[in-house]
Structures are given as C-alpha cells and as structure tokens.
Amino acid sequence: MSCLRRMGLYVLLFIPQALFAQHNDIIAIKNALPRITDSANYADALNRLSTLYLPRQLDSSGVYAKRAKELSERIGYNKGQCDALRGMGRYYALRPHRYLSFLFYDNALAACRAAGDSAGVAVSLMNIGTFYQYQQQHAEAQRYINRALKVTWDMGLDSLRAWVLASYYVINESDSLALPTAQKGLQQAISLAYRYHDELGILYTRLFTANEQLRAGEVKKAEENLKSVIAAADSAGLNYIAMYACLQLTGYRIWQQQADSFQYQRQSVNYAVAGGYTGLILPVITSLYNRYRQSGDSGYSRLALSVMMQQQEDMQAGEADYLSYAFGDEWLDSLQQQNQSQKQQLAMNKAANHFWYYQLLIIAAIAVLLVILVIYFVRAYRLSRKNTASMAALQEEIRLGNNALRDSDDFKNKLISMIAHDFRTPLHNIVNITGFIDEKSLTVSEAANMISEVEHTAAGTLVIFEEILRWIRTQLSGFVYRPEIFPLEEMISNTVKTLQHLITGKELRIIMDIPANTTVAADYEMLQFIHRNFLHNAIKFSPDNGLITVKATRNNGWITVAFTDEGSGIDAAMLPYLFTWNRNAIEGERAGKGAGLALIICKDFIDKMNGRINAENNADEGSTFYYQLPG
Image 1 (cartoon, rainbow, N blue to C red):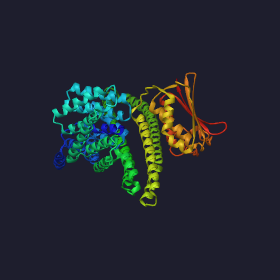
Image 2: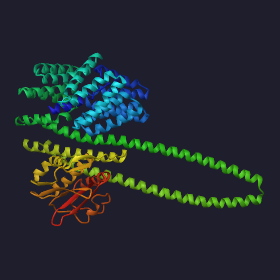
Image 3: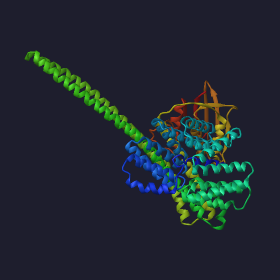
Image 4: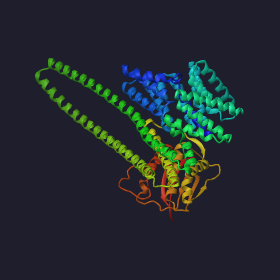
C-alpha cells in the first residue's frame, strides 16, 4: 500500500490548468499553433499542451514544457517561465527523477513569487510538499501543504483549493492522529470538484474515495468504484489515471488473496507503456517478469531493461536541462552588468573630454602664449604620470581577471572530466550487459542476475548524480548553514543498511564504538553523504572477512568520528592531496573510481559545517578516515 500512497502523490500533479481538459482541446490547440503570431500567446499554448498531455502521454508533455521554457526565456516572458518550470517539474516527477523535479519546483516557486502569481505560488508549494512526503519528511510536507492551503484561502482560489485539499488528504491519511482532518479535507475537495464541474478532479477524488470505502470495510463498493474510474479514464485516454486505478485494484485483490490480481497488474503495465509512465512501475514489471520467466516469456525482462536504460538517458538529459537553465541566467546577468558598466564608462569619458576641451579654451583666452606653453608642458607631464599609473593599475586588474578566468576554466574542465569519469564506466557496463542479453547467450537466471546488477548500477549512478547536483547548487545559489541535532548511532546504522549488500558480499564485520546517546549538530544530508563515502571507501579496500571500525569520541568541545579499515592503506605521496583539486601529478591505486570527486565534496561539506577532515595510514595495516565537528 505504501507504493500506492506514493503514486497517489503523483496524481496531484495534474493541476489546475488541466481541470476541464478534453481530447478535443489538444486537437484545437495544435491546429491553432501555426496561426499564433504573438510569442507570449504561443508560449501559453505550449504550456497548455504540456498540461493536457500530462495524464495522457508523458513524453509529449515533457517536449512541450521544454519548448515553452526555451521560448519564454528567450522573450523574457515571466508567466510563461513560471508555468514551464512547473511543467518540467511535473515531467521529471513522473519519470521519476524526484530531485530534478524538486529543483524545478523550487525555481518555479521563486519565479511565481517575483511575478506576484498567487495561484502559481500555491501550486508550487503543494508540489514541493508532495516531494517532501515522498522523501518521508512528513513534517516538511505538512509545512508546505499548510502554506499552500493558506494562500488558496487568503486569495479565494476555491477551484484550486480542491486540489490542495486532496493533496492534504494523501499526505496525512497514513497519520492516525491527522486522519479525521484528512478525511474532512477529502470531503471538501469532492464538494468543490462537483461545484465547479471539474470532471478530472472528480475522477481523482474517486480514487481516494475508494481508499476510504476499503477502510470502512466496503470492499465491493471500492472495487466497483475503481472499475468505473478505469472505464471512464480509458474512454478519455487518461492513461495515468487508468494505470493508477489498476494498481489500486491490484492491491485490493492481493489483500483478498484473489487469483485475478495479476490480470490488473498486466493491465496497469499496458497503460504505463501507452502513456510513458513505465519508470514509476518498474517494481511491478520486475514482479511480472519473475512470475512468467519459468514459462519462457522474456517480454517483461526486455521492458524492464529498456526502462532502466531510458532512466539513464533521462538522467543525463535532465542534468543538461537544469544546468543550462541555472548557468544561462548567470551568463545573462553577467552580460547585462558588463553592458551597463561599459555605458557608464563611455559617459564618464565623454564628460571628461568636454571638461578638458573647455578648460584649454579658457586658459588660451586669458593667458599669454608663454604661460600657455608652460602650463601645457606641466599638465602634459602630470597627465603622462597619471596615465602611466592608471595603465599599470589597469594592467594589474587585467592580470588578476585573467587569473580568475583561468582558475574558473580549470574548475569547469576538472568538474566536466570528473563527471564524465564517474558516469562513463557505469553506462559502459550497462551497454555491455545489454549486448549479452540481446545476443541471447545467457540463461534466464543469468539474465535476471544481470538485470539486478543493472538496477544496482543505475541506482548508484543516480545517487552520485544527485549528490553532484546538490554540491553544484551550493556553489551557485549560496549556502546557509542551519545545523540540527541528530543521533549519531542512528545515522551510522542507516548508512550501514544502505551499503549492506556490499558488506554481505565481502563478509565484512562492522563494529560501532559509539557511546550511548551521542548526538551531532550538522546538516543531515551533508553528513550522511560523508558517512556513505567513508564507509563505501572502507568496504571497497577491505579484504574479504575483514573488520571495519566506526568510533566516536568527544574531547575539548569537538566530536571526532573515525572509519578504520584493514586494507592496503594509502600511498604516502597521495595523503596531502586527497581532499584537494590539484592532484593531476599524483595518481595512486587507493582513490579508485569516483573517489576523487567524492572526497573533494566531503571536504567542501565539512568546511561549510565548520569542521575538519583528514585521513591517515594505520601503524600496522589499513587506513583511517575521520572528521571533526564542533560539539
């Protein structure tokens, strides 16, 4: 049921422009596009198409959203940019690439606030709230959804409030304390949907009504309700609603231990393929593959492999989309500042030229020729010295500017080369595995194992990508450090669980020497990134059946956390350069694939948390990586 709750969050993305969307609207808008001459109206039409396609065909929705974003940025159309950013966020949420969707939602919220778009602010707040709920950060999700509700109340946005109330229900229905309020919110959402004849909203709320009917023990009513929704959605071409209703009905049939549950699972996959939502139901496709592989049906294995390959391509395309958007704004601002500075300098030069011209005329009129010559030579000498000094200062500024540009270009080249290095090997492995499967040279069991390996590789690559994006974002938009108190032993335990498959594979033992009730004040995501990389490094270079020790001590107002392994240790020549950029001249075997970039990001994060980080070789064998934080 938790999977259904997550997909219920995605249901709430189809708002509010799509409230009365019909298939005829799509045809009419596409036919009208060649006749639209106003660029702003054209951008609005593209955004409208993106929203209409969202519950029908995800790829088409993404194409129109991207075109609207590019056009709106080119003509400086703020409303079009706000709508397009939300469209890109919804597109990546359904891929699903949740962190990319959050970045676009966050930018959409800032743009809507700057443009005074209250409805856009409410929608963006709601979308961010659903993102936090999916990330299991319930408190943050409640905070954003409550803010969205307040905006709709204050601004009288009743039709939009129906969608926000439905989102409030999905976020709170699993909380027993908040359930009564969530149920009241659902009833209000249903009432508003009927009041405004919102047929799409009525279909969505019926999905949640079925959930309440099941909670009340009315199983048959819930199933009939869902079957009716599937029929209506299928007739209207709303593939996402039909897919979600099939999955919901599958859950009910499995709960009742009915044999026809797989029929609805297959039906949900068909709707997902038709609408391009296969990334959301990869676990369902894998389950069907495991069920039918004994009969020799390889269709689901090929589908699962194609979904994972598509996710890799989407991840790279999404990285390019967001970085293009972020760096594009920065480049435009820089050009505008340079243009303004040049205009000011030209005005100053013109005024200075006029001043000297009239000054010389006055001197020539009141002075004798000799005095004029003396004054001229004196002034010429002084001006020459001043120009010489100014030229020297200007040359120094140019030199410093060139050095800054050279450093920036060096940073960019290293970042690009490191990203290429970290992503090339996982993608190459996936291509090789795909080749083996296409050649049909593997047994079903071997193919299943390779698909599982592809899944682990893709997941690991996605984690690296999200961590790189987070780091880049701290460099671009500024960073405000707000430490919170967290239990250290719980954080380490979560990290161990994340890497348990690697620990089990090498039969390693993990010893946590952490005093009871030890806490640490830090940014949670940054510190967990450091924990994952230190533990992963220790696992990677530990021998089979080895021992890894995680020890925490507190001394003189500092807490020290150390990760010790029994590996081969670190080349002494590499130790001073582990956490810096300038390591081109020294290459060792200890760093391994991806370690360089990870350690640099670790150093950057620990600096932002006012801490220290280091690594050293042990006296007997292995090495120790540790950090220190105030506390």
